[in-house]
Image: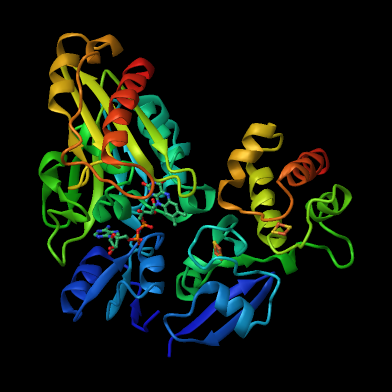
Length: 153
Length: 264
Ligand SMILES: Cc1cc2nc3c(=O)[nH]c(=O)nc-3n(C[C@H](O)[C@H](O)[C@H](O)COP(=O)(O)OP(=O)(O)OC[C@H]3O[C@@H](n4cnc5c(N)ncnc54)[C@H](O)[C@@H]3O)c2cc1C
Ligand code: FES
Ligand code: FES
């Protein structure tokens, strides 16, 4: 069995896995980090979005082996202890979620947007969320949340 | 997904010998097409050879009259490249319109061109811009490279290393995206270089990307949207599926071609 080593939320992890193990399976099943969700499993919904070396990716469409040596950030690594990340806080303030299933992926995707575009327009936010599907909110409050976070990040 | 052996060679020569030595080996680049296909068990390679550690396959260089893009360069890197934006802005726009941000962060130009999906965007750009496809064994003109739906001139164990695009005088790409996947229902790329015009159509043809020669002739004498008035595209060899009929696609080719010429 291949061995993988990577940094997840600041901690070095290593494990023996089958080559076919997806990054999302490694995170959820081996590391028990179940905040990262699997919605579609066909690379379309974005519930599984995490950051690998600072870029948002779909963890259901990457092998754990491909993330060997990388720095991985999941929703569990975003808050600073009990202090929510500004994006999480903004989702709470603006009722940016209903059932919450899409939320970890939405938040991780939105943080990536603000990391390289500090002040996106509403249109740019909506375009960016192309790969994140929400069945509940109708997106308006998600967009509002990201706009509020942009003033704080 | 069926299990497989996974390799991440550090050089092109090692990647080529791993591929040649495997029973049913496949390259993995961004994985944005291959991994979903393997998850559906539509592909079950014995060995995956990951090109991520082959350093010289990544990056963009430009000499002002052409742009060369390494096979492992992501769509996001092409879209954000100041060289590409300066020399061939239409190509940066093609990359920016692929899928969604997470697909663009992983998917590569080499993977897209080697895969030749009949609805993919890059094949139309390569064909209209008269690109050269570079591999570990030689070079192909785009006209010779795309040989049919999901089919290219690549040998089983040949590795695409770069795509080289000459600078056109003008070019633009317009696609009518499938609203769910963002793949092209119809996409038309037009380019004018000297007195010649090239028009490539993706998303529509039963054999994948193709050139629209009647439109090219009309645009060669007058590179303007009106030059395409009266040219009707036959629906005969076009795709019909749940998204659109062949007739609808035929109509869209004319509309997208005019919009592309106007935008160029
Ligand atoms: C949700 C979603 C939306 C998408 N939307 C679009 C879209 O709008 N337009 C579009 O054009 N595409 C779209 N794609 C496809 C995307 O662009 C892929 O990134 C691309 O088709 C394949 O590139 P890859 O690097 O991911 O290749 P992989 O999936 O790793 O490989 C694809 C194939 O090419 C082969 N291959 C890869 N690299 C090489 C090489 N260097 N030499 C030889 N063979 C090689 C592999 O063996 C495999 O058969 C979408 C994908 C997804 C998941
Ligand atoms: S679970 Fe990864 S995109 Fe839906
Ligand atoms: S809040 Fe339910 S899917 Fe988005």
